[in-house]
Length: 304
Figure (cartoon, rainbow, N blue to C red):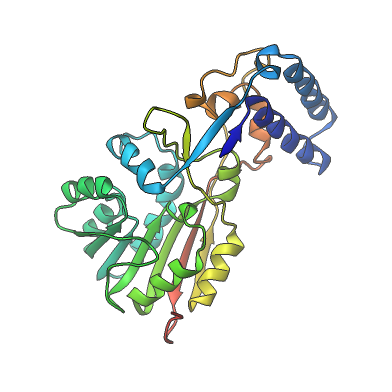
């Protein structure tokens, strides 16, 4: 069981901001302002007396079943963060048999079909696949997990996997599967939520049957985690990007006397309580949102 407390989250943001100042990213005025905010947060009775919230752990299938009806409503800002780079990589690759792994509602299946690829989409969520079949009728969609793809060996020239690997505890078997279904010399293009963003609280909610708080199991894989799993499966890295989000304009004034609001609105409403500390989480260059890879499968037999 996860335990979430609004004061703990806010103090965590302030702590990261203070560490940034300690490392030299910010000046004396910034550090003293953070210390003053910490005192104000601790003095806020709505935060100090809050009992916290026990939060269950949910399977990815449950979370994405709930998310499927609104997944394409334009509110997922990570699409804007990773699509320009992924589209740029895909534009340079020849058309052929392509896999959209963890395809969801068919966002990349649709893009790959428009580029002339013969597309197979695989996902572990029947609800997402129903929407993908309607969205991309020219593609073929199959139910299956990332670590046991329902494809024969050397079936595709290209595999794309977008914003899904954070739900996988161990990347090694997944990359081995990508190597198995790719032909020698084939491309693997991956985007994933950056571990910094996961630690900031970007985790898919999945309330229980009675609406009780729940979160989809999420794993903040580092860049090194991706690279080690890829090298073990016989992939060679061709490109790695980590797009950042740099907020425009000055942060809004802090509202350290505010109430924390309902759990369903966390962590986003909590962030607005201390906007300057939240902005400092990513440092002066901005918050790392996603990590994007282009790998090429080597000529040898993939690791099984």
